[in-house]
Image 1 (cartoon, rainbow, N blue to C red):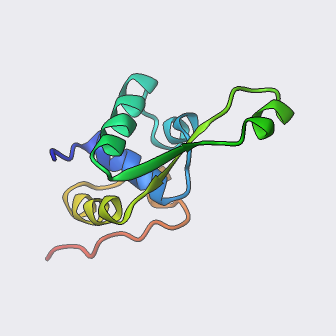
Image 2: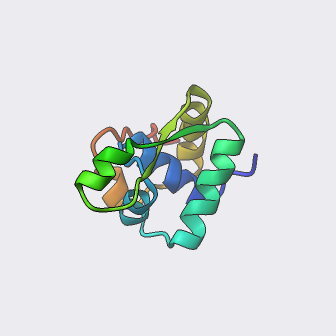
Length: 105
């Protein structure tokens, strides 16, 4: 799989606990036309799992149901490799759960 910077940013956002598309967009600064195709591709490749939230929770908040995404073990391994290739933007690097890769000397 070709791991681009946008793919890495989406993986990192998921690893930091951002679970649905708009939340990933906010965390990464990427547009929906980038985030949703990446999420679909990652799901197809088995790197993320996706499930629809309980419709009642969405009705209670008067909004459409969200599709929540979660990294699989393979997705986490790919993220570790991708982190070594790309620097993370400060906003994502400071997010809870982010552990920068050791720098190469």
